Length: 171
Image (cartoon, rainbow, N blue to C red; front, side, top):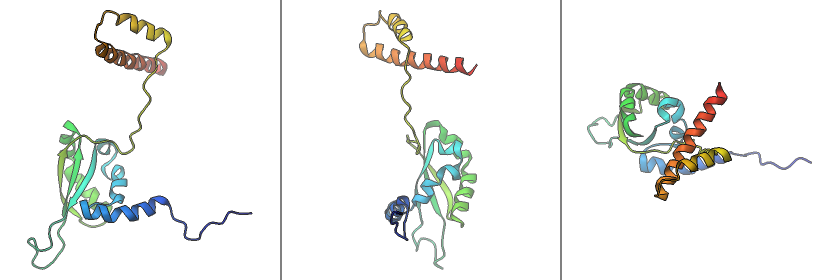
């Protein structure tokens, strides 16, 4: 016997987006579809360190006597010194965002520098040392009195040994 499925089955993401979109539109002028498509719009190299924050639309009576539509300004959050790279790509990003919307939705980009969490960030497990590697590293750190410093150097050493192991297996 087949399980009963409603004829109007929807994906949870579609339902959630329909609930969240009006709130996002009201607070930041942005939609979940833009947030979800940001990696495609910005490209993998820019999406890794940036994300759209808001679209500021001009007020209806602000310089528009005829009531025509005026494009808005997209605010993008970007990490650290990478702002420079994003600044150079502003024109291309404006073109891509407008292509996504299908009309000239924005005519300028404002970049704010702040740390961001990549959307699809996966926290990888910390590297593990073999018992012999761990003992060797601990022996080298015996003269250090500060426990905090010892732990920090131990993490650094673990990372370095893990990288060396990865390079050796690639050869």
